[in-house]
Length: 140
Image 1 (cartoon, one colour):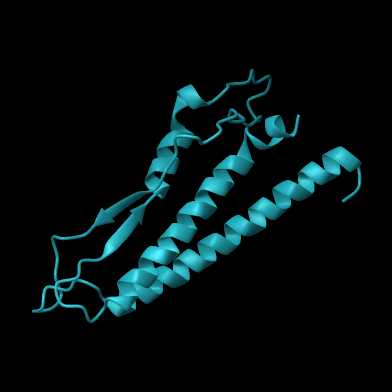
Image 2 (tube, helix red, strand yellow):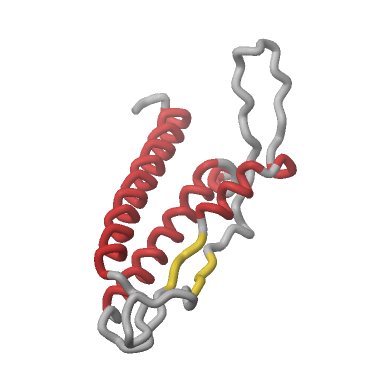
């Protein structure tokens, strides 16, 4: 019974997104650690573009009949099983003569942005669990 609740809808998507943000944090930390390594090429995590594609894919959505033009269409129950982040090594650019392409200021800004992204995902996850608790127990 519980696997049906937790295997479809928002929670798996939030879980995958949090996993991708955790991976991105690790990759950014690796980039920062190698800022002075000659020839090091930075790595990026590609996830949000894939997530947007999956969420906009009509085959993943169950369409509901709308009885009023002011109603919103509700998406289907996608479990996100095949949604995985990609790691991409950025090799085409270099800021320095030693071949290293890590800019510490850019990486620190990306890290801050990723921390805010992760925190917002964690808040969304918490709210989803609160809604489930409310639906099950009738108390908040």
